[in-house]
Length: 523
Ligand code: XUL
Image (cartoon, rainbow, N blue to C red; front, side, top):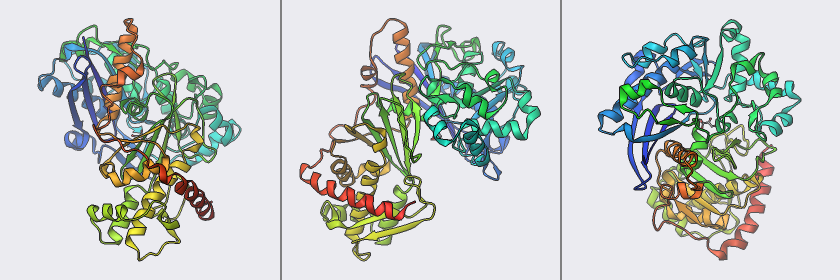
């Protein structure tokens, strides 16, 4: 069988994507939007429950109901699920699911004549799951860092300082505020391992890719860290299953799905991983130095690293790659399209005018610089918005357009140095990636080729590719990652933009001046 299914359980929807490895094509792609189908039942808005005070949760029962609907939709659209050799998946990172001691038995005895929702209703020790948007755990972050011996100890051990959205601080808060329910919890999983468990009909562990978003995993050994568990909550080890390697088959699909949706009984289940680690694979970033930049509302940089290096300044998150060898860095620059649009609008331009302005101005902008903090910035940390112009006339539309794009490119170079990898190629996705003038600036500043990528569901695609890689390896196939991702992770034909060598000295000078300006205006 040559077909593999990747399932991405994300914040607002669940997506199934089938690849056909014989043709190198995507054979199916279906999504179930939570609000469209479940708003009334679960009272969600954009897939989540805003509980106030920074608490953002989602109902895990809704995710199960959505899984049933997704598989039914794939079947109804005529896709023969009996041809799927293996399934892997991806989940929004950091969200935790809390199950009681009935869960294991319920999962092993799923009845194909009833739906998941009705059968699973009693298995939760906590009816809602805190997700990555939850910012209510600042106190727990401080306590965990203090408990383990300081922020730097946690950073060195787990690859990350304590983040409010990460699972460890969320678990600690649950233990503190709902000790009785915590005591009744016999399994804590992530969104990824929970959905995988539903498919396998047994409780499954977390993989290192998603485990590294918990503040609980030793990033060097890719196992739970006893010290981090101790600093988080009592008896935590007992509630977590040992980490499973990302490419190790977890089991066969439960008979429930064979009878209900026509899956083959031989279809295997791979560990699910986090959406970002899966996207790393879906974007084809399987060699150190390969970097992708998504130019969206915020600009997000994904990089493949050969070692779990960390940023002293906490500029980014570090996860184990599900390729089992490499690591990923994720850096979010908040002022992405936010800043580009602010400049475009300030000068009354449309995108055509913006592009022309970029075209008509010189690389290096005659030394004109802008710090584009239209909104508070994540990297570098800037708490209050404030745009700074240096050698730059506010009335000069063209120079301001160039300044904002050069600032973004320079910042992405400066603040990815901690990754310690030579950026060999930059794959650019997202709305602004259609603009070749913008891409030329990034190519020149990074002095490497820039390729445009068109992708919508890189997490689901990455999951399907993970299923393919693991299945063929288990069955004696010798394909390496590069070969596995190649047919699916191709840049748009003819989209490659080479750097202009004559700009190298210009940007070598400008980057120093930008860094000085930035240091003067950030803490
Ligand atoms: C990453 C993060 C989000 C979630 C949801 O650290 O919080 O990207 O994974 O997609």
